[in-house]
Image (cartoon, rainbow, N blue to C red):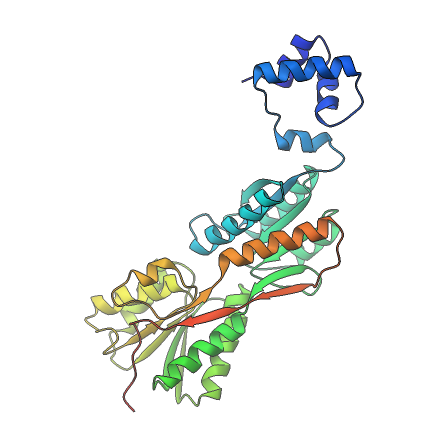
Length: 328
């Protein structure tokens, strides 16, 4: 594959002249024609990233993801990529591996590399995040979490929790065990849980038991194997579909029939839940739409179009076979 050095050598000019031509700088007509001819002969495609380092404006969008093995992340990223292509941007991605320090470092590196804007698919927003984002010379949009000083795209986690519990109350449930996650994740660990407990209160649930795990399937399986040794858990709501699926596995290993002996529900609308037997009751989140909206918002900010600070993506309860009408 040809390099700028190869193009410069064949054209009899310096690398800086080729770079200046590629970035729209001033070169003579004769030199421009010579460089363009060699570029076509060599089938040379300049790296958008390399071009952005010298250009006054960049087409690069930096996206920071928390993890690669997440259905929610993958769908959000797909939505972002669709709009990136539609608007003729280029995508750079950084996997932060659920590490806040890596996220902050990625924001700083993207800034040094002159991206046009940054999207952070966030699991938490700390004071350090706020500090580095406020210093950032390019617009930043966060997805999945919110902060009053940063443009955010969030799912309606509170409403998701409230509506799921309300739907289950209509099926006859009035006792609940909730397997949640740490409040480190504000959207899931705080807002979603608040919606669940508000829904339980509004629908006169008699008993609410709360357990805390994390996002890992293995932790959820361990919790479930202990939980389902006892028969007094008619309804278990999990913070995510992945946790719910692990709980279904644990219930089956403990000989508990779903939904006859225990009903299980989750959040996310992941495909895996619809391939379970029985199918999982869930709240569908529009991850792809959140990705599209976040990139559309970032584009407006790049073009300095005034935008609302927070955009909320609606959710939808989808009743599956894993819950049934309870006996009154």
